[in-house]
Amino acid sequence: MPYDDLRSFLETLDKEGQLLRVTDEVMPEPDIAAAANAAPRLGDAAPALYFDNVKGFTDARIAMNVHGSWANHALALGLPKETGTKEQVAEFIRRWADFPVRPEWRDNPPWGRNTMDGDEVDIFRVLPLIRLNDGDGGFYIDKAAVVSRDPGDPQNFGSQNVGIYRVEVKGKRRLALQPVPMHDIAQHLRKAEERGEDLPVALALGNDPVISIVASTPMKYDENEYEMAGALRGAPAPITRAPLTGLPVPWGSEVVVEGVIEGRRREIEGPFGEFTGHYSGGRKMTVIRIDRISYRTDPVFEHLYLGMPWTEIDYLMGPNTCVPIYQQLKQDFPEVQAVNAMFTHGLVVIVSTKKRYGGFAKAVGMRVLTTPHGLGYAATVIVVDEDVDPFNLPQVMWALSTKMNPAGDLIRIPNMPVMELAPQADAPGIVDKLIIDATTPTGSDRRGNFSNQVKDLPETGEWLTRLHQLAARR
Image 1 (cartoon, rainbow, N blue to C red):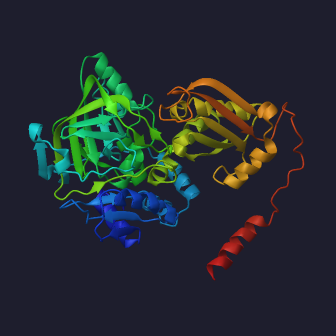
Image 2 (cartoon, rainbow, N blue to C red):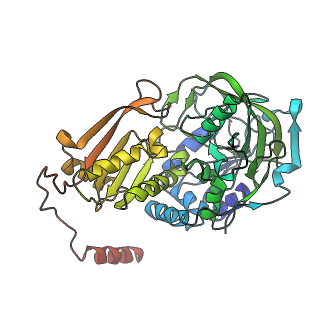
């Protein structure tokens, strides 16, 4: 059954043994972030964490690591918690075929029971804010679903956007938001500023687990995240209108913050410990003026730790980065078998493919770099044969060590776009990209001698099933 809010999902995690309630008094810093940093190291079934006894706060409720394991990610999709990574990606692809599923409009959202307006707004009275890493420049909100619309086409539901961006708290009514140029909100802001307007936004915090997944999915500009949420849930996503901006927001959120990105205004934001495992320095970023906060009674603050992988964000953005790239490649190259873009949000992409002719694998690699997400993220693309599982890193390393000849299999493309957070770029936003062809040459491509590759014995598959059954009886 799909979840309509964060609280119902936390209840399921609790029942499944995937929620660890920390009842001892903890320090807001560094205990909460350090615990969330450590939690994914418990393995693929690491639990979510729930804190409600935080020193210095009278009534704090903080949930961390909600998506921070393959077990939790599976439960978010309504799958058994034992479902493996490849199986979750395959199920994601299957459900993608049901897109779009129109959302369900509902009235009386639970977050509408308490409000702050105008000068009475004070975000510090609603959220128990903490720093995540000791080098962060301030308090951050980093798991909010930020909703905006195309100011030039406001009635187009497809071009409305729901995305997750880093947001620094600058004051009681002021936030700083980083709109990565490759993301839809940056296009919305550019159009608003060209018109001499502010950009209305709504930030929904503490959402049902699928909303967080789709908000971090690199969909096309005119694909609507709520319609994708319906496909992944197997039921329409419940949404409602934010009272001040009229923007469509999740019905079951814990907190909804409304305001505007002030046109042509920038302030220093950062540094912040990012998903790349590095701090990003301070830069001038957009400024949000908060005009209204609506919130549930006793709201749960869902926060996300990120830093040196793997952390929760790597689980959250893993399958939902693989699948869009796979779908976009498959349209042009039906030979593509699978895509693994789980590493650092797709800064490295591994693709397995069949080949039609010589040089085909290199063409597939080039296409990765021109997908919407690949343009801003894919810095290295590794292409392997169809019998190499891109999710099996030993197999990928075997392909690299035996198929790749640097004399002809490395394609370096200079001065390509990349997100400004990529630490390997000499100049922010620009990097040389690399395609590694680790496939067996075919057609007129006669490099190497690969005619005698060892294949699995015909009985291997049968024995694998048999060994699983024997192991299960132990």
